[in-house]
Length: 256
Image (cartoon, rainbow, N blue to C red; front, side, top):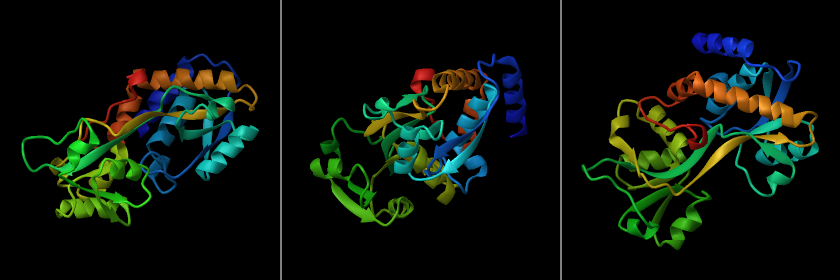
């Protein structure tokens, strides 16, 4: 952490500052390990946002609320920004979006049982497998429409534990979230797990900046410049390795 702070101090000195240095309150929501109140430094995307702003000469403080409340306050312009959010046509009406700060990629996790990896072209290719999921998961309708066998659990962690003992074969989960669950619950057996190469869906995640907030376009430009700089300096990659060890998670393709 000290090494990262030294790097970003240098960035803050070197980058041109378009506006006077400020401290902003930024909205976010618990979504571990992307961001969470009970995590060191509030999680991966929180550190990315913090360092990118610091590299641009600004400081941030995080305010945790709900996804809906984030959107409402950004519309009003009472806060500069919220994260991590997907870009949509509706949100484009009231917000600007930064360069990607992370990716949200849903894949199938499985236990390696043969040299041949599991993958698919169409979901129907997976009909021979039992799929474990949490009731209400956003991919459930897609899985059922494809005719897959779905076994429900009370939580993502429970699904992974059921897969570990062979009660289910596949689990659809966010790549970053799934590896964090494995790392926490099976730290000495990470090598037993794998994911499909094909994704169920994937979307870049952004800092969502209020169009109603004063000087928001200039502040967004400063943030983007800081983000590019922490990529260039290797800070972003260090943060990835800090939160997900022994697994290669790619950076957002737009700035990779």
